[in-house]
Each structure stands twice: as C-alpha cells, then as structure tokens.
Image (cartoon, rainbow, N blue to C red; front, side):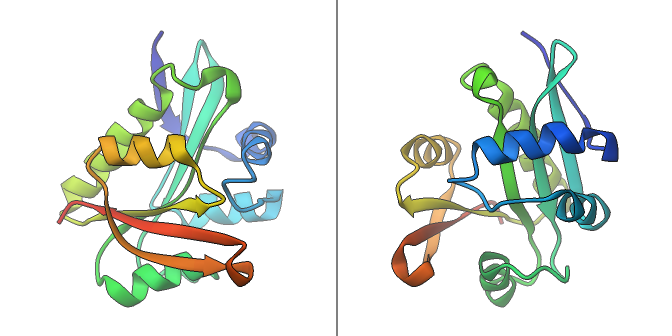
Length: 162
C-alpha cells in the first residue's frame, strides 16, 4: 500500500469533516467554516491518500495564530517557537496500514527542518491508549496535563524535538 501526502484543499471538506466526525470523541468537532479557517491559518494541512482516496489528514499551526484553543494557549505560554499538531485523523478502514506513520514522518520532518518542537495532546481521560502508545513509540515526552469540562476530559500534553 502506498500513502501519498498532498496539501488539503477546499474540495476535501466533505471527506475531512466525515473523518473528523468519526473520531470526534478524540478530537474537537469541526464544521465547514472551521475547516476553511484551518486551510488559511495552518502552517501545514496535508491529506493522506490511499489508492486515490483521502484516508486521513493532519493540521499543524505555528505560534501566533489567533486560535481559541486552551491546549494551543497552554503551549503558546510555555514555548516561544513550535509546530502545534492540532488534529490528525485517519479513516477507520485505513488504520494500522501506515497512514499515521506517513503523516507523522512528514510532520516531524517539518518541525525538525524548522528546528522547533512538535507539540500535541492526547486524551488520557477518557483514555486514548492506541494514540498514547503510538506517540510513546515515536519518542514524544509528556510536558503537562490539562483538564477540560470539569475534568470529564483530561489531555496529556506531549512534545518531541528541540
């Protein structure tokens, strides 16, 4: 199986939103207006195609973006320079087939080329064990935790790189 990474476009909205919604319990919801905003604001917005079909996506933001996210705000307060992986999602049928690895190889290379840490968060309440294991295997280190919704959701803040 070959994974082809390419820039996301406005034409990808329907598929990206469906992939996001299928994983919304681990991600934030996203509507078409937010998706279009991300396309404009993102430092990196990539789609991963398998056999010509969009099977996953990733959105990365730079510091200084006007983004109302507590996680992003936490990283902005603690790091001067970074690449913030806001969200990554892979279609159910494409998981465990190398799509995530291809996406992370590209995103980690993007951060490394710029000499900045790659920052992100993963749910620890409710736990997202597959994601935590994946990030541990790729060398991400915990740098903090942040509770949302009165503790109903808790994220582990992770960093990799300088």
